[in-house]
Length: 275
Image (tube, rainbow, N blue to C red; front, side, top):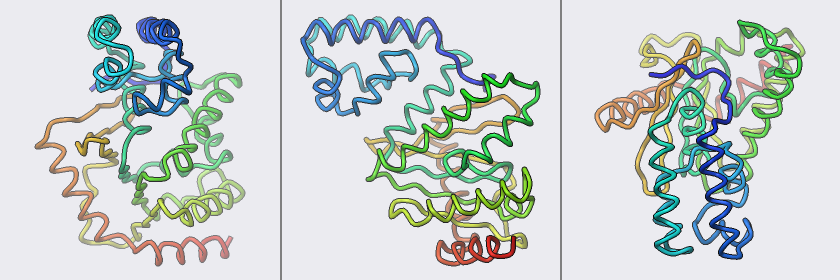
């Protein structure tokens, strides 16, 4: 478990990105040419080169296939130095990288509506209540960054996004009536995407398996599962197979206890009409 306040680009990530860019340039490849050859998006390559994303370990062997063994050895050395310096920002960046390359994303939230489902007014309401307080400039940066993450819905059309959200979070009317209206409209809009499934956990549910709190699960391209949890400015990336198995079992129970996507849509529409 490691403290994970708002992520900042570390010098080690910048250095790795500069090495990757230099090797790519030396090979005479643009980001758009290089990206499909290593099986990542051009946007993801750009973020790694800018030091804004923690590189997945699979990048090294894929780079060897494209740039050759010497380049892969150089990049591997930079990566090994980077992994020894994983810290505050790297946990978030590492999860964001996993999230961007996953084939399935499972989310359960009981504290706040998941970031991928938050409209701009809700995001602003969250950061306006951040303790310690942040500056207006920092608030704008966080709003932009969180909205940018939602591009995953269109960038990852083959990824299955599943959300289980507690009804209490919607009934709370966090931020006021206008924020709640925007939230419900936004959730209904996302629910209509073919690769997004939102299930609402009803207020009354005696047989509830969410007592361990929020959780996030991602299935990687090679069909391994990774978990992520965060609360009160701390976070943890979970890779232990036994822990992941338990999280998947709990998530399966939660999906069976929540309303179906169709019933959830009806509830969201009813709540929206009642405002």
